Image (spheres, rainbow, N blue to C red):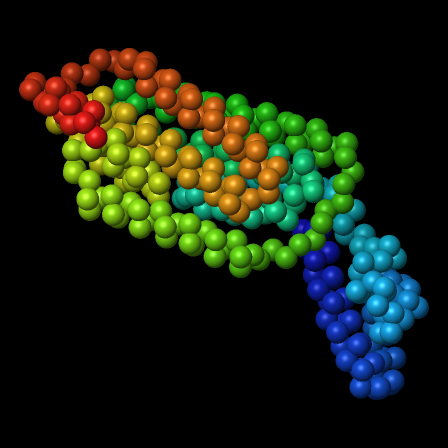
Length: 328
């Protein structure tokens, strides 16, 4: 709240400065004096110091009074004091936002990381929140499988639980480090534009390209190319391929269904990591790259673990479908 209050006051100061200079340009001394009196006391100090630099005729003068040391905003100190609470907010964003779309959470926190790029403690908190949303995605996969085909859950639980656990552990590490850093750094909170049209355009182009690739692949790849289809479908959505493969496992090979779902989850994770690199701060991207590497390795390794409860494929289909999958 303190940060929003500071942003609000700065917006007011900016509009007042524009009106002040318009009056000054017109030579309207009366309006200029009225506006000068209506500046906030903190801003008036900075404005007077800035006017002394003769900004109209002095090219080396600061571009505006907000660049001067005299311009202070007490709300920023309060925001910095409350910054540790932002880590908790990022976690809650990841937790509840992940229920709807972990990709949307990734997009939002990546854009925020650019505004907070010079504050490592904040970036660590954002990384933790982002990874929590990924954890929720793994939980959603397990729930979807349990609802559609409970028997398949014994096959899918090891890789999904392992990737989810790894994500939680890494998120916890980032969260703790961020809290420790924020409690000792004393950094001020930078005020940035909360809206980023450039980031939104980048995301739209990136997502459109992925959707085009998926559509072309679905059109030209044979339906039996289970793993390729899963990898491509996972680029945009894990839920659809999870439901599809869980249903398939009722009559088909559960091992193929399990592998397909894990591949889709890994594919989706790689795409979200790419989004962070495309839209987020470098410090966030490096943290997420480490987490993604661990998740991919964990998922691939746990596919080698046999199901907790053996599931037999329908007679006569196992060999045929396995060959189809391998022959992608």
